[in-house]
Length: 479
Ligand code: ADP
Ligand code: MG
Ligand code: ZN
Image (cartoon, rainbow, N blue to C red):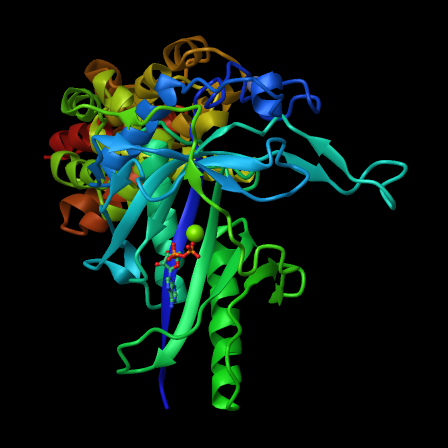
């Protein structure tokens, strides 16, 4: 029998506001434990939450970018459960009336052309963090850091539209690209500012009803998401093929063993006793606000890639690299604005520059110590033939380690190619005089000797003769 996997994702994205969702505490990552806390986010009795307007704006931004319907009125609810890292004993979330409904994600790569529907996007606060390791008494004690309590999140829920582990990872990756491009999330999976839980079931191919699902947590990379789902698909199939039944449960991915394991079932069959938070009025978002946010939305990654391909004639590989990895393509466009020919600028970025960045362990352009204007200057010098391409690479190297401009490096070290016609004509005459045999051969029709003569010219110039101009002049003189 063949089996069909069914997958739906729940993505939590931390919004890039500088303060928390219901208080003025900072959201900055990496601060000393419990230094970004106050009575509101610690849940002191009587402390009242006040909604951060910027959080709502960012959530609307995400909703609009993903094609969701922003609801005119949504409601904050209390999700009640006991856990040490939850200071109030409930999490403020949205439940039956979320901020946004619907929306779609277009799948990239192998899934291109297919769409995954979104169910909803809602706002909620993050919980604190339990620290189980690293203290002298960690064997018997758990410490708590509430800096993260009250950090704003959106949860994006997809319909169970995904059918392969690969598509699920691609869908998550596409969501990341969009959230990063619109500036609402930093896309950092390792630090947990973007997290994905995957719900997965399998069913006999052709059956309409979904099978029993498990929820896989603790995947902090796209590759792990794919691996965890592949593991879970195989595991559920094996259970069903041996006549067993899949238990609905939450499972944790363990990257060391490459397996998912059942999690302590703290949340199983949980009754969260949701009810509207009496301390927060319904959130009202009028059409004007949505329109205003929509108007400030930047170009989305897919649209930008398509524009780069048509407007600048870039390959889809280059367009993808520039937009997804190399600063969203902004750096590239700044080079073009500074006068660099587009194709050459893209080639330099995706070639030399990217190669050198990767050697240094970089994953994007942020480690590049050269401004777009300065790099554009270098590319122009190389493109116009002032310097040869191998000299250009050396100049790039110097620019990387000093803050000198290309023009200055070239002028000071006399690296410019000789393009002066009088100088080149003198060189050509000299070469013709010195190599009468080769000249005779050329004139007798054995024209492949021509390369040798140009080589002699370049040699006589100390490697600086512009090869194309040199060849043109020599050819003219040889008649
Ligand atoms: P919960 O209330 O437990 O979070 P939801 O109904 O909100 O459950 O669904 C959570 C996620 O699980 C959604 O992404 C949804 O698409 C997905 N999902 C629901 N049923 C299934 C199923 N049978 N197999 C796989 N995924 C599913
Ligand atoms: Mg859920
Ligand atoms: Zn606070």
